[in-house]
Image 1 (tube, rainbow, N blue to C red):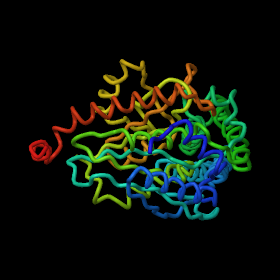
Image 2: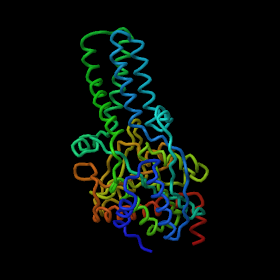
Image 3: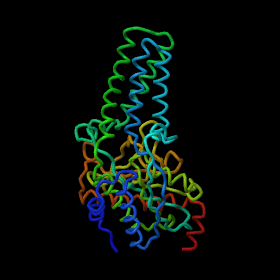
Image 4: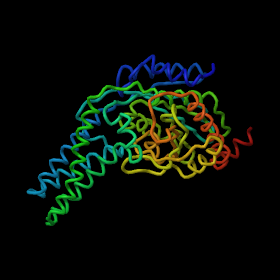
Length: 384
């Protein structure tokens, strides 16, 4: 069997449509992908986990809490600061992956990862990751908004405004007053009002088909599972569910396999939106906090980029790569972006081919340069 990357991506979209986290369509897509991995001669299994997908509504509630806190702080500084602090902490704990907070009250669903182990006896573990669910649309996903938010990330203005309102409320709590403070506080409060409307719009929007985000990444993961043959790394594939619920699938995988993912021997290669544009690789991921991609992987990606002119970028969303990095695992995300730096919804065969060439070159460098440093690498080389 030979994987046709473009055809695989189209088959996922045409066969299962919108694949919301925890939906029936997502479950059927998972079974289909497990079958595709088995057709490649690999073992494949489904691993279930619980997910709370209603984060846009939860964050809208946090925005509303901070807006009320900002208004109250003028006359009731203690109450205003308490509400602003609660909104900020609830959001920070949630978006960082430390603890799912308010969205736990808004409904739980069952989701699943598709897991295919390769050679577990190899000195190293290369985990190829791609999420197969798709997210909601809304105004913030339209071209005009998407391009404006690419550089800072869709959640960064919201998180920055929460922090700014909290700071103003704490200043008032310390007894400072003045017109200047009201003007300063007014700006992030307006941003929160806009964020509240956009988050509600996203919560009510339809789920998208996810051609590029991320049927493209899934198809490339299958292709790499077929073609990548490093000597010192076993190639494992994890197709995650519920990435659009703040990377819950990757977090479930990492938490469930801590004993098998030794940090000194595991590398995560995350594939996300590789269907349109030129290959890029992350140097930093996450909204707040943002974490650096593994320095050695960034260096190897830069060395691999010469043939396909790949460039680095900062990924300002809580991706699967961010979830792995948060757990202390060496990880990097490969994506394709347009010249403007954003990613469209369409699929392009040339973009998929470029991403494949870049990933194969990167995997080769990981094997040749990081492989010999792995524990038990000498014995493995002698056996070969």
